[in-house]
Length: 142
Length: 142
DNA sequence: TTGGAATCATTCAAGCTGTAAATATATTGG
DNA sequence: CCAATATATTTACAGCTTGAATGATTCCAA
Image 1 (cartoon, each protein chain N blue to C red):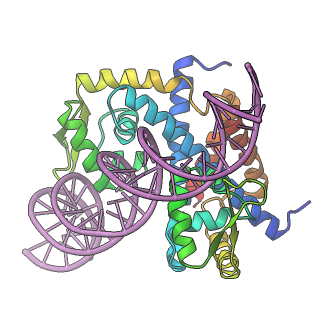
Image 2 (cartoon, rainbow over the protein chains, first blue to last red):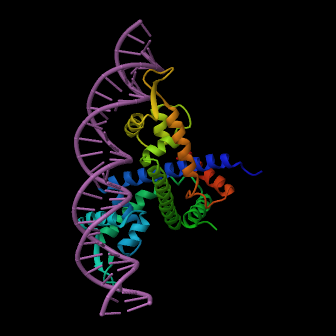
Image 3 (cartoon, rainbow over the protein chains, first blue to last red):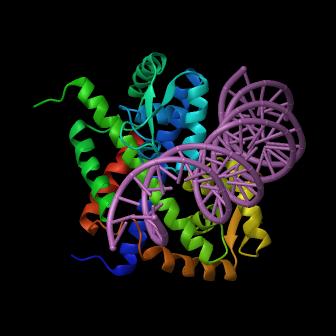
């Protein structure tokens, strides 16, 4: 019951399309929620990923983007008084990103918006668990 | 053994990050392969999704992008002699996209490149099958 | 049959995203 | 101490995406 190599390649291409499609849906949902709060999609993603103080590099990795892009996004958030660049406690090269009170409050509102109508809400928690495992495996094994 | 609602929301957010991360990896891989052939990532994605003749709208849906964007990409491919806009057999509004011989040949080369080192190759065919089912369910149930 | 609504494709403008290279500062290891 | 490396930033530029407006065509229902 093994799959022929060409069939396997076709299946893998379809999978690429599905992954991109779902990511697109997630991005759309984020953008809609962000617009409600006067944010761009990137700014909202940054806010979503700011689960605690972290460096620029950490945030870049969480956002799956380049550090130079993170600088741009954090600049915007800083001008809106939502985030602050503090000196890093141990590494003077790095910045310690911290949400302000306003930033934390807005993040909470954002998370509330993101929770309703998510593209992933069609899956049961069990299915989401399986999906989580598979995605993590794909990301770490590459 | 049910998960509390807030824990559930946290898990869903993590899942969003993973989906975006994997999509990013796929996009990078496509870009690298595309560069080898002198194509942009979008052009390569269009070529990959051209499994047969289809309309602009069909291609846009397969590429998960707006039709206006597809016009732009197809313009480029047409200028390179890889694709042609034929009149649609039954609907005079629509275009019937068809790959040229060169387009078909380049598509084959592209598929060969895409098949090696894919971000999804870390998963077994069985795991890919499960992933396929979950992604499809998430996309159609929304 | 005919008029209005909806669909397909295109164009245009504007902003966002992404890469890449260069720079300044700071850390680490030999 | 010095060379190599890491963090963050800046700049430039191409590409992507959205959104709205337009024209042609089709569909549907009165």
